[in-house]
Image (cartoon, rainbow, N blue to C red; front, side):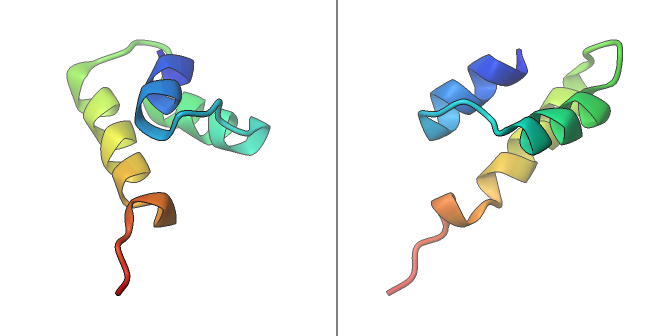
Length: 52
């Protein structure tokens, strides 16, 4: 799930550090709230910031 989210949102695989953080965030049991938290964390990355 983590690989798919990174691939579809950023067009790349997560780094090892990103994957470990996402894995801790998601926990052992994927729940809707943990997936939403991961998506928000990705959307807040600099790749999604628009600077004029």
